[in-house]
Image (cartoon, rainbow, N blue to C red; front, side):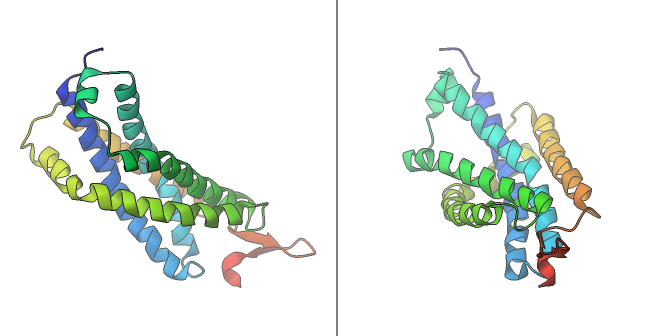
Length: 203
């Protein structure tokens, strides 16, 4: 087994907690838009794009732990794997997350009636929302303490600046993607029989 420091494990936990907290806030706003997605379609799209950066960071952090554990890094093995039900659900959560975001971007780019994207978006969301709720309920209680420990430096773990920089970078990437959609072509469009473009939220 190759050696991995205990600090590396703690740093990974804290980075995952930071990424998860950012996602929690963004997803809360995105959930609010579902109360009237026709009226808040632009906000729904903007938050959807803003989610991309933090989602990539969260997947990267959890993927790192996965890789280090299964390549038998000492401290990651000592820390142990996540609870078995969470390990079983994780691939489904990842796939449904990719499905929701990917189909949403396709809808923005190609229009409401572009192939099966609307059906995939709705189906992915139905699967995702249940899995995400279980994931949040299981891990939420640990997140505040991990974030507070890093922000207040109660327990020194090297790389605090790098972790915060990665979080800021992920938010910036999402914000840039969202900003790039402003003023772009009409979204969630569909075409009538004579080919005229119409906005989904105009109906």
